[in-house]
Image 1 (cartoon, rainbow, N blue to C red):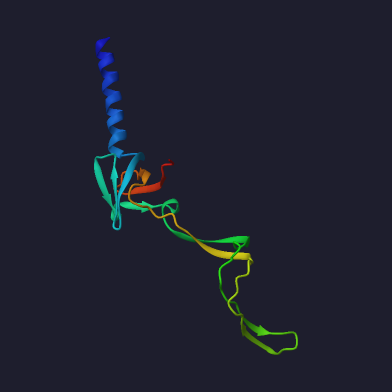
Image 2 (image 1 turned 90 degrees about the vertical axis):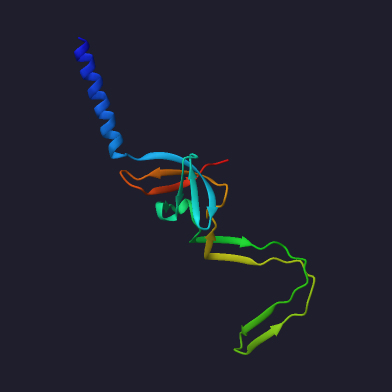
Length: 145
């Protein structure tokens, strides 16, 4: 009976070693120690550089289109307005108002491009996945605080 138990334990160990040898995807936690060049310290065991990192959109600056229907904040500052164009008669308009202290807002509507500032900064804590059998790590997201 002890030979059978020994065989089972040996098979279990061999199976675990086979899985470990393939290096399946693993989850790691890291801390950004430099933003430029990007360096992430992983669980206080190793430091990864830019060549080892694949960044998801969650951790990069990117541009995207959004539809907006906003009004600017009311302004009481002294400023001018320039108006150029044509009136209903086709006559040219080119005027600049004098400096005034008039409270007003401006409407902003339509499809606009914005930049989302998601780039990593020193001190950010991140979640990483190691690619199976690879030396690359995917920086998936920040850890919420």
